[in-house]
Image (cartoon, each protein chain N blue to C red):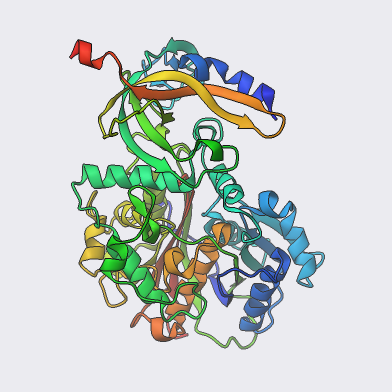
Length: 395
Length: 136
Ligand SMILES: [Zn+2]
């Protein structure tokens, strides 16, 4: 098969660092990032990265900072190494891994550090809404006063209408996320919710209610990558390899899509990864998907082929997405309940999937998890990046 | 800010001027010069009627900076009768209940005022079709 990955060496995730999501008024963006980097380097037995890839969306708007990667490399005691920041809104984390993967696969870089970081809580809501709205088409969407919540609401209303779904059709995405976050020490909202909480929740942007949205907060997470010929003598954890890597794009503006209810970039990048890894849907043990708004969880399940068009919400209703279900999603609470960290979100997703495969997920552990699909979306899905992570046999 | 940026878009913002592809007849709005359907150059101007229907809609309460004074307001995806879809605010709703499929027509309104210097940006919004009771 033409697209089957043929690299000489496996590329492994050898260390992860996750910090609690929340309002960290006492920490700056560089301090948030350093916490995650320090944790990841320690987790990787001190392996020194040759290159830094930063996933961030909002620092230029909210922290007045470009060249964030050079800044963070210096601040983390890595002055001198190659460093670059990647921006693809909520897909930044997946895109950062994609770029790091390409660098390692090329043979030009042996070890890499990825850090996703976002600092948002210094700002008032109107400024945050304007900053988030930069992920939409500036000339043809944002100028009309649209917001990221409004985009999700436009999709959700049309979804419920076209598929004749009940008003609470998406409730169980939120209930599942909150149930999983209850045992995640890094989550913002560690409290399970009931269906009544959802149906009585205040509207944010009809039909999107408070429990259909994710809280935007500060956070940082990090990964250390290495080729399998450049590993330290001893690695304390089971090995997780990147079995497939892909990215795709579609129109930024919702109105430019032939079918707005089809996340074509998500579908294409998922298809490419399944093809590269030679896997089918039955092989996937968990799916860390993008759930900044609950409608994206339903649309992502459909795009990746786990449900037919218009049927994604039924997987939530039927319990298929829960930790003991057929296709567990958002196993640490997702953006919904762990908290959404903008461009850093994808790195959280990838780190959480790695914990699952290494058997280090604690109370959130999926039994016998060997293969994880991880998908990051930017804005309303204009950018999608999908990866398959796999536990290396015998490690 | 950015007076020239808004000036460049005045044709489409004030008159719904878009394009039609001379190769495959795809109707294009907003204008984009390369046809998304066939990939050929498409710079032939085409003026849209301004009539369409609501594809989806919602209300914005938490407005971004620059839009707070209008909040709450209704945002819609409008399917133009010629085919393309666009994003716009709905206006002049009065007591009308907005529904998917509701016929709407374009009007020109203030979109935002840019900060303290007060540059106003005008463009299209959509209101319920006035002629609909007569033609129905
Ligand atoms: Zn054409």
